[in-house]
Length: 454
Image 1 (cartoon, rainbow, N blue to C red):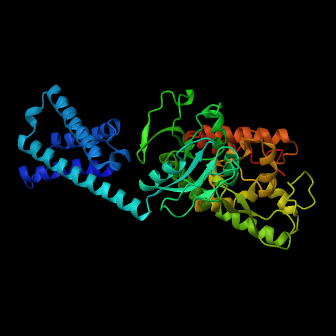
Image 2: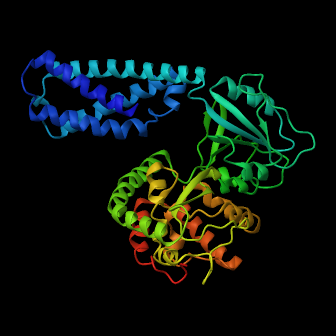
Image 3: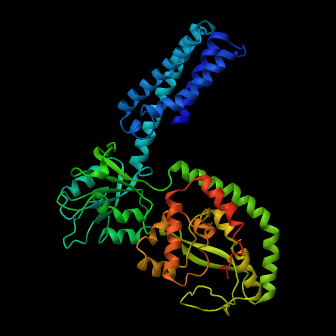
């Protein structure tokens, strides 16, 4: 929508130039004015809440916001022109046609976007999938479910905060199908990833003596936007601006670690650098593949199921570094492990066995930087021992990570070592930045032959 707003400005100026000057080449003042209008549009429209879903859910209200923002853009341009005393440099006909054409284009594109949104919601393509989480004594859960369903939300799950002997039977978005029912909020968090959820809407019990942060604590373990339908005053909501979700006032309580823009930046980083590293490593990978094949019988690549982003399973690839064996316990590699081959010992010591995971990075199941994925058996084991363990799945697993460059790699023979690794993983999840990713990639070169790698 912001792109079409900018194009409306440019289109209006172009049409005005054709009307006023015909085939003449635009002069510098014209081009400068158009360039400034683009920059000001990108700044003013978001500042006046004239972009995003709130500007489209109610077309009339959104059009009023867009009109105010449009006038503000040209008001700023007029102030600049008067301040620099360059008003006489512009044709009044050109300015008038520019404003009229740009506004007409803006109105048309906004109406189209509103229609696109409405059609997408009606067909289900743009419906937001919601988990409705409620307290034991919360009233009107069924009414809220119906209201959300009528306004573009699809109720995927209904979740009681605490186990309830008499569960509330909320209806689905179509009024007939029943959403999935979870035993409790803790069970929902543990099962997260087995269904697609875009947002959680929390309806706390007004009589619950716990704070919102205590009630919603388990939700911090997963990557999910969480809104609250307030039942009263709570310090966690102070300073937060309410908005309407399907006509119901809600307040945002927590957001995913990465915004949509952050996800795009990180994915671009993975595609560009991952492809570059894969091309550079291809000759070395070919040599390693031959050595693995000659050293011991068995496949060159080792593939195993791991839990990825939001606990969704994926297949991870490595160069095989052990003799083919059947170990149902999935024991971690130890020093002088008899299962490791001669070539495999060198590969593990230098981390070259991890190179095929560049394929995972390019395909999108992994990232260059993130919490290292563990075997599913270890996920189950440590998930029961460390309360915050599952929170590491709020971001894609990585080829390298903050824990690894700080020395917490290799065998975790004690619970304390795993706790330290999780502590560093969660620091990365909560403090992600492109700078931090690039820093970790450079530091990884220093720890490729760490003493704990075997």
